[in-house]
Amino acid sequence: MKLFLHNNRVVQTLNYREWLSLLLVAVFASDFALFGANSEIVPFTPWVWILLFGAGVVPLLLRPMPSLSASRYLLAWIHIYLLISLLSSFIAEDLDDAYYAITNRVLFCVLLIIATLTFGDRGSIMWGRRGFLFVSLFGVGMNFYEFANPGVFSNVLGRSAGWYVDATRSGSALVLSMILCQDILPQRYRSSYQILIGLGVLATFSRGPILCYLIVMIVLLVRDLRNAASMVSTGALILLMAAGLLASASNGIASLQEYWSTVNPSANEWWTRTLTLTSSEQLADDPRSSLLAKAWNIYQERPLFGYGTGSSATIEGGQGTHNMFLSLMIEHGVGGLVIIPALLYCCFNPGGRYRSPAILPFTVFSLIWPFFSHTIMNEWYYAVGVGMVCAIHWETFVRQEDQSPSIINNHRAASVDEMRVAQHIAFRDAREVFGEKLTHGTSTGGDTWRD
Image 1 (cartoon, rainbow, N blue to C red):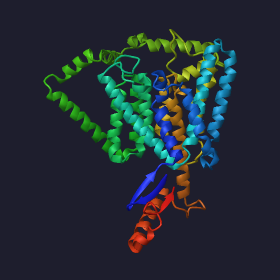
Image 2 (image 1 turned 90 degrees about the vertical axis):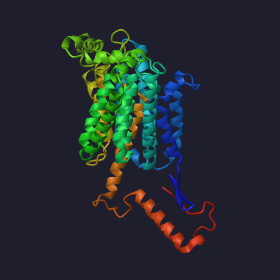
Image 3 (image 1 turned 135 degrees about the horizontal axis):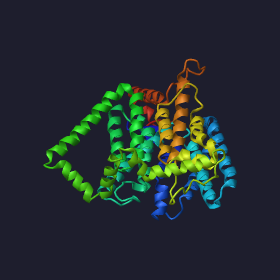
């Protein structure tokens, strides 16, 4: 990021890496890469986006990247994951399913590498997180719009999805974006933002994302106990306002039920069905429960090595398991259970005792969400999210190491932001003393410096 003074004001412009990080999040975290191709907004297939961004990161390799040393664990996981997928494909019965699964995994890993290279410094990390903030707000707006106009994007009438098309994917993407960007917001805005994301997730009418959001919010409350009062008070205020609006109407609740039953009947049906799942008999009749039971029986027949890559794609009636852990165990045996925990370990292994605040909620999300989805390891927004959280962790480690008294180089500036402020103050004071003499010979009216 380039900073310069113009008319006694600090002006900033984005450098190449920061623009690339912002575009990467905008294209993949919003799922525009897939939605644009499926809706024919863009004239090429989704993987072309990966080729374009892959070419875009090549110039970054010509410059020093200290964060690459922290990525060696992640690169090792990628090699092992793809090797296991390739070897396991030789025992698969359906080669088409195996080829499709390997293709998706290769694209996921390539995008993960691109994200890791893109988020290589503090400026790109910050602008990438701002990109996640914009994507999440845009996603909430799309879900609200589709709630009032069912069937615009979603493949299930009445369940908002936006550009993600699938309501479950939309909800999980919103939760992931909240985890990655809520720490950059001022404290007074975080509670409102989190509640707004919760409303966007609720509009999907998907039980998995709703439960995952509630668990992540509990984790955030525990992590930030000192700010819990603010979060609770904001939530209580919004609930009171909603209750007051309903109570002020003559038949507020009845009007809401009538709206759901006429404008959004699928949402009303989902709500009724969810509230009635209270007994063991009703849970047994739930289609997903029977699907999981059948998938578990299939796994038990070959618990050691599984059935091969791609074998969990269709368990019954063309449906998957809706459980990533179980899918990996069916394909690779009991060893498939450790693939996702190994990914998290490789992401957060560097850094010793230093931990970013985003690690705990992201880890909880990554270990809970696979119980509700069998496609998380194919989701491109998750690949970008993993690359981002790795970069956040590494940046936190470097910053805290620089500030540690045990480091020889602790005499250097503890923070780039502090250095910017000091330079700006010194420049302003110099102008007051020397007047226009300081600006002669410059076209912008002041000095420039680069972060």
